Amino acid sequence: MNDANDPNAAPPAPQERLPTRNWRFDFGSYAETRQFLDRMADLSRREDYYPDVSFGKTYVNISIDAEGQAALTERNSSFTGEMEALAAADNA
Picture 1 (cartoon, one colour):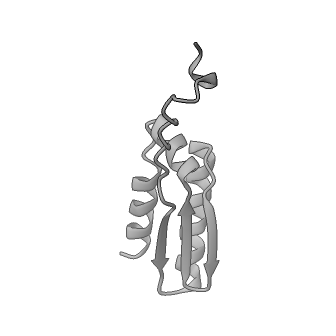
Picture 2 (picture 1 turned 180 degrees about the horizontal axis):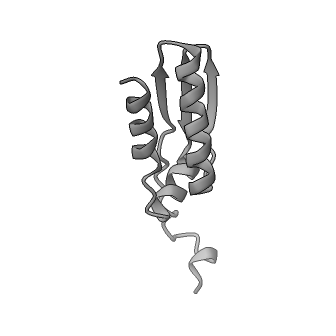
């Protein structure tokens, strides 16, 4: 008998869903913020991945949802590490 039709079959285990990861990067000036955003654009084009980004004059918020995290993991991408390094370099 097929499990899909078996009323006594155990329900499928729920898939674990990763929480959305969020970063906030603060900068000393709009010029530093703009420089970071330009470098992030280059990184996104190179990796072909575009996270959710919001920003103001001296900050940038970046979010990567569970689906994005899975895609980056599948590709063995170093996107988040490179993103953090860019922010550290721009804040140095």
